[in-house]
Amino acid sequence: DVKVTQSSRYLVKRTGEKVFLECVQDMDHENMFWYRQDPGLGLRLIYFSYDVKMKEKGDIPEGYSVSREKKERFSLILESASTNQTSMYLCASSTSRVLNTEAFFGQGTRLTVV
Amino acid sequence: AQKITQTQPGMFVQEKEAVTLDCTYDTSDQSYGLFWYKQPSSGEMIFLIYQGSYDEQNATEGRYSLNFQKARKSANLVISASQLGDSAMYFCAMREDSSASKIIFGSGTRLSIRP
Image (cartoon, rainbow over all chains, first blue to last red; front, top):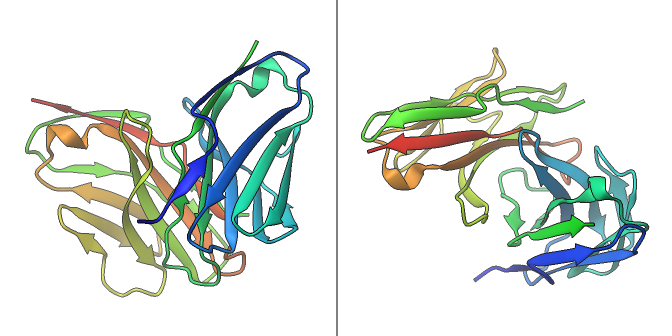
């Protein structure tokens, strides 16, 4: 059974803290994604990676960075957490170069910044 | 730039009726793929159906079908004979061939099925 695993289901952090959200996939997928989900805004792409050490900005990269040192792991970093980064964060992975394959999602991390 | 628009924030439908969820998209690519996902209250993202831009037939998967109108750039999801378990958020998504890694989503439609 294919799996994308996010390290935490719920997180509470303080303003200004550095926050790491971890995501691991076991499908040998080339592509990995980080989205944030907010009511009325749907899923917005923060960053994605199409290979180890390769990354591209999505639509809302400000205040975030990412790291992909190994193919199976993609980390989202909030350098200095702010209250407007309180949200649901979803990690996903997919194979590359084949249009008709869907992305597989983790269970999500609900982050609250206080 | 690629863009997905879902204009129905919420819908109420009577059980056993058919329902259409709207999705329009914008792309300059000739080759692209369109996806629909379901997100129940548990939060998991469930893939429902896929339509390729070159597919001549509308995609179908059980009670789900995709009404694909390429000239209008619309890819509406049709759910036949709705069930209480269909109550969920539904997201339309797109992947362009020129940027095969990137998948973007719409804002979603919350579907509620009335018994």
